Image (cartoon, rainbow, N blue to C red; front, side, top):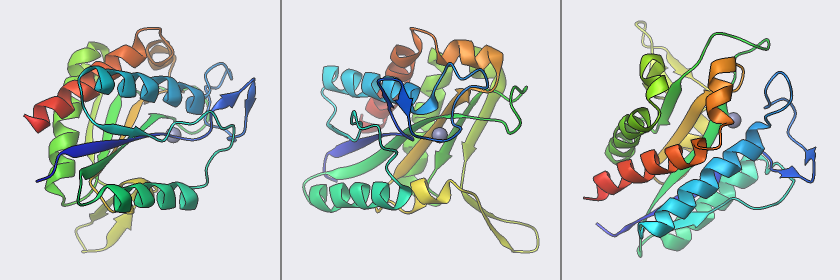
Length: 212
Ligand SMILES: [Zn+2]
């Protein structure tokens, strides 16, 4: 197996001098813009990976444009095609979650994982556990590791919106929903100064364990 290289994606658009293109995707009070916060977190992950000598490629630009899914996937799969043979690429995508209808009770960590793929499962498991150690407040709100498609008791296939980001990249893929920006307790965690560092330590620690 070749050395892994992590492709780091931050969901939605950045905040460009106060301009945020993505509709919704913010706390109900408008103070936390998910895309901007995803970038804060994903940058910290890149920083920690650099510090620990873990190879990665950042997809976090300063562009105010919310890259449409189709182009985001083309970008990811372009990177996959470029790195394959030399490295084993893995996509890690960073988000926070939302409950429909404004402020709500739903909170905690969910990790979405490519279905029936051992590398994705192993990385999801190791990083999910490490994140819960770094963010103990979420240990009571563990939403677990989730798969974007499942079959019900009648054998019917169900798909969620996550299928695009975790099934369509041509490599192992994991997407983190790091708390709910629609929950006041989670919002205090997500928007906190220490949050990016905690996530970076959790994800990088989990990934390092997987490499070892
Ligand atoms: Zn998101």
